[in-house]
Image (cartoon, rainbow, N blue to C red; front, side, top):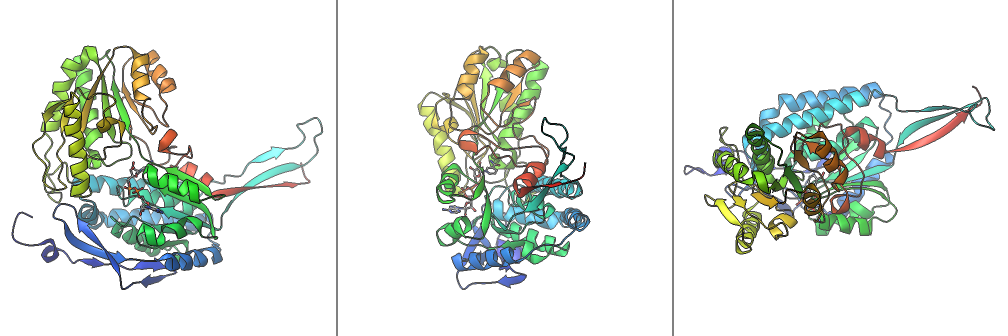
Length: 488
Ligand code: NAD
């Protein structure tokens, strides 16, 4: 804080309850939520237990929604509108619990609004199929039809880095398909998920269809995976927890949307003007949401023959970023989730330096406020770029001019989420689209570029190949029932 006031003097500290079966449920033990910029407590949520999760799943499993497509669409549309109407308040709390700057928080509210808009439209589409049976050797005068049905309950476990949008990507398709979901948001940034639940209830959603339980993973985590009423687990988070879930979930259907280590590849066919454009993409992609996007640019792979021209452009753009007080509307880069995370990432930079990298810009870290550190000549197998360094570091790896070698380097990590390639040569673009082992390849865009209904998800350690995005999630959240009728 820039003055003597504490955050508690400026805001009303939120003491939230869980949302179980339409009731607000508190517990004696609570989990504190801290503002990363000052480390002050800005709210608490209950330290819920497995018993709370059990109750919520029981309520969800016993509720059979009768909402029509029209009603679901209306609820989703209204939820999107309410997010728009409450944008400033949501953004304020996103900044307070996550530490990202206000500008990035506003961006997230708009993405979430899009999710509800798409889900509202999709709820109106009849996704059944019809097959005539008179088109085979042994055909008959009948027809086969399909319809999609909701499951018993869905368990959603969400990460800290997109407290509004990630939960929205779970609940909006769940509502669109008439499902009941129990969500356990992360203990680090749970307040926005609770605010979102209230928005949905205000929009007309029966409370049984979306419940929120909070708690520490060791107290409540197993129940979110193994409860008998769960048919589907939709998890977004890091690789280690994703693999624990995969081990424990057994027969239950799982969507595992895990970490990333995405490259932006800068090809040697670019003009000076193109390199400028590529540098803008590189810096924005590495620093957006404080580098805490699963699809943030984690490695800038630049081909040798353009590196000397490209690197100064990146440096200039990184230096121009105004980082600091996340609540200042002018700030373009705020904090990472806590100072321990910032320290780990900074240490990885120093480790890379010992391995031959050159730090070009590092104006100093203050707690969780990690600047956009620009580091060049990073060895491609350095921990800084082999692991997911979940902060606004801008690491440049100089790679050979041969595209096959670049693809081999790009594919050499355990991750396979997304990627971006800057080239004007269509043949090269196609080679990269085909050759990169990833879930998405964006030509002339950040790896994170998507619209909220396009299919999204990774392979290898980044995910089990199940796609999210409103349309795919609606398919994943339903069972196809096939039936046939004796009429042509
Ligand atoms: P995390 O894996 O530490 O935690 C995610 C969630 O799992 C939290 O709600 C946490 O409480 C819960 N959890 C932890 N241990 C558990 C256990 N044993 N049983 C059940 N639940 C448990 O992830 P995080 O640090 O909150 O989020 C950042 C990670 O999420 C990054 O790796 C990022 O790349 C990834 N992510 C992926 C995507 C994607 O779409 N692929 C999107 C956003 C974030």
